[in-house]
Length: 285
Ligand SMILES: [Fe+2]
Image 1 (cartoon, rainbow, N blue to C red):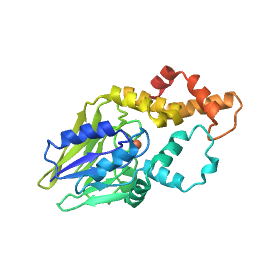
Image 2 (image 1 turned 180 degrees about the horizontal axis):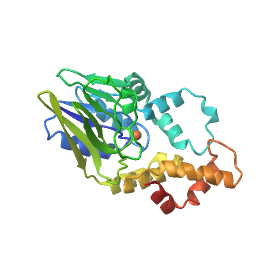
Image 3 (image 1 turned 180 degrees about the vertical axis):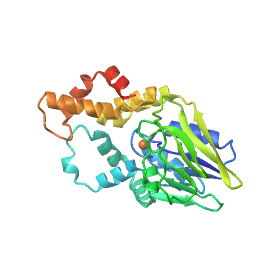
């Protein structure tokens, strides 16, 4: 049995297409999607349609899906801030069919035919009670009593794997927005070998510049230019820019004495224009 693991696509359809094209050449039996399909870049409905076309795919829900499903149930008349505009845009542009599909996804899944089952969720925390270090570093020790298996998860957008005796932890990295310094799309393959699995981690180059050009002409960019500017920086550098910018926006709003949260449109945009991107980038890498 060979299983492809794909996580954190975040609406980056061209990256997903490039990964799926490579996977087609690698004799894979199942594809497992580990959440966060639907927020980030503008090609959300198309991304989910492509995932739906995969025969026998297994998919779990990420925190991005949870957030959008929650937001979809909220009163929209209060959606006047600048900070959340990309999320509002996404909720307005997801088709009803897509929302139905996202709501139907389980939080965890198990592919358990062999002696070492494969457990899947968006985060390691959901399956084991311990979290993956956000900034990389030593993988966590697992609590006693965790069943032997392969634990597959995404969420931190960093590709890594580690062995804990017969148990394997694997984060395939992010297809759509890698944050480990390598902008190429990331995924992994699990190859079953008797009573264990071999992990193959892959990177796929694709045309990031043409994705950026398409993002810039999208209606998401028109609706939420600061968010798409952040996403473009992340695509180019494969580093997280949202968290440093949020920290900076908080500092900026306090400096100008603006208590409105989520950040109002004028403060949100002014904070972006006043942001020393290079200083934040090096601080948070
Ligand atoms: Fe994510």
